[in-house]
Image (cartoon, rainbow, N blue to C red; front, side, top):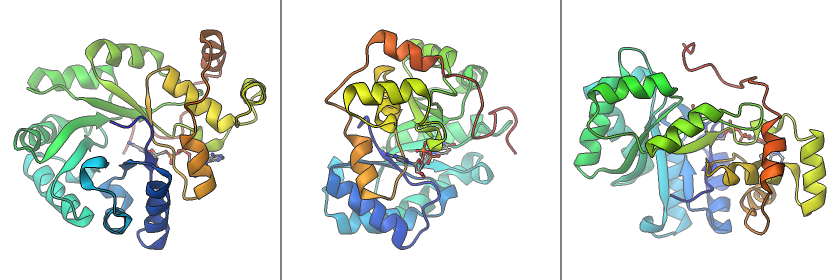
Length: 259
Ligand code: NAD
């Protein structure tokens, strides 16, 4: 799984998403993160088709939305997503939110899709420790990925440790915290020290924590910046200083309180 991918939430389904994905592919991105909820899978598919990158080099993720959950519903949702993307298999399929009473059956459908070879990996999003524990009561296959809101303000250390200990790869959504606190003193200081931007310092912080990142940008210059993270590293002390930015202020809903 490539460590850096392009997130495409809130990119519309026509030219914006097509241009953004094509630009990212040209820059060397090979990992794209969409969802049926984003209503832009067709645009992502169009960009993949036009981008000319061999299918086996790409890592494409989509997600089953809350209203599509349940066993049969999820199998149908998967077919719709694959059709819109114009693909004949998916690299990663995720349960978008832990819909109470539904997600164990949804997971059974993901296991079937995985066992049938229609998706190479399956996982969840927005699962806390107790959701994973509940899932594991009936699951045959353990989630391979947990994609959650994670950035310095929402540094979910216990969940990170739990997933690491369980062999579940953590992936950060809103890895940049939507750019809301690039002016934090420690980020500016480290950006200056390494000749990088605060955005790059945050993204490097994720990599030091072994977290996969999917920053969103439709701007080629920023896409390039967001993938240019492999010529510097942060010391343990610097990582710890960034950890201290944690306030717990979420951008999204708490996984026990979403609609
Ligand atoms: P993000 O943290 O990636 O922030 C994106 C915003 O930051 C952009 O709109 C832009 O304004 C700004 N930005 C990006 N690069 C920048 C740079 N180099 N310099 C300055 N500003 C920059 O937030 P996000 O889009 O919410 O999250 C990323 C992806 O995560 C989404 O696109 C989506 O694919 C996924 N996601 C998943 C869930 C889920 O429930 N599983 C929820 C939200 C998002």
